[in-house]
Length: 256
Image (cartoon, rainbow, N blue to C red; front, top):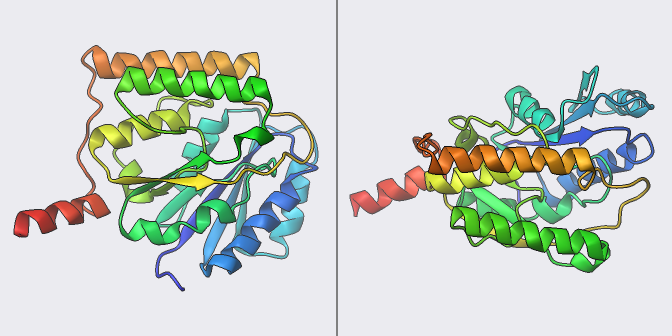
C-alpha cells in the first residue's frame, strides 16, 4: 500500500560509529517494506568518534538522508525537537542510532495514522533487557501513570506523531523525559492515540545511555517541571490542530 504523506525519521546518535550505518540501513529497508517515501535526519549529538563520517558516507548514496551535528551533546530531547523543526514529513518518529530498534516495528503501524494522531508502542519482549532496566521501566510507568492520570503501557518508545499535533507544544525536557512530556501534553490536549505492541532487538554494541546518572537526573528535572505545569496553574492544554485526525473526528460528530 502506498501512502500520500511523507514520513520523517529522526535518529539521535551519540558515539554510535559502530551502530549508525546498520541503524540507517534498517530504516531505508523498512521504508521499502512498508511502501513509503521519507527522509532520515541523523542528529549527531556531539559525538567524538566517527559517527558523523559514517553518516556522510551514507549521504553520498542516498539524497533523502540529512546530517545535523552538534559541537557538544544537547540531549536526546533537544536533538529530537531540533529534528522536528527541520523535518519535512507530515508524520514523524524517532528511531535511535544504536540499532536496538527495528524501524519496521513502528512503521508497519502507519495505517493507524488514518484514524489517530499518535501511535504509542509498548515493548512486547521486555525480556531482551536486563532485570534492572525492566524494574526501572515498571517503576517509571507506575509513577507517571499515577501522577498524570494516564493508563499507558510504555512512554519511552519510538512514538509516531502526526507532526501538526506538536506545533502548539512547548517542549521543556532536553533529555530522556522528552517523550513522556510530549505524550502527557498530547493526551492532555485530547488527541486520539493507539497503543501497539513492539518487538525490541538486542543492542549491537555499547551500552544504553538511558540509565546513566546524568540521564536519570534529567528525567527527574523533567518530571518536576511537568508536574508544576499540570498542578501549579501553568497551562498545559492547548488548541487542537485543525489538521489533526482528532479535529476531523470532532467535526464529524458535531455535524451528525
